[in-house]
Length: 84
Image 1 (cartoon, rainbow, N blue to C red):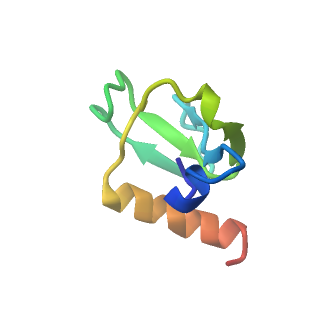
Image 2: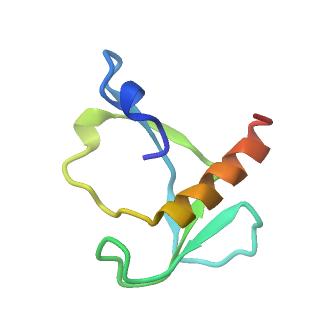
Image 3: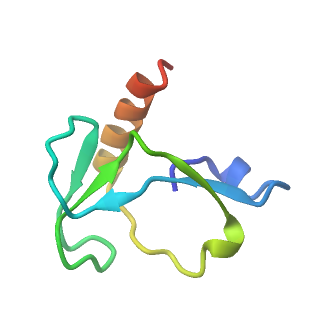
């Protein structure tokens, strides 16, 4: 999840997530995630340019956890995209 815990556990029952792709399209805002991360079988790329808000009801299990370094890269790209 890309959103903070206070939002994730709030009354809206929503979380912000980032989709991933297994295709390296060369988009500079994608963050590479190498295997094995959270049980992934292939290298994936986080699509920071496509954040999505979904209901917590859609979360049945944690799919993957990334390193602090990867989250820093994701955060950096989101700050640039959102001009924060």
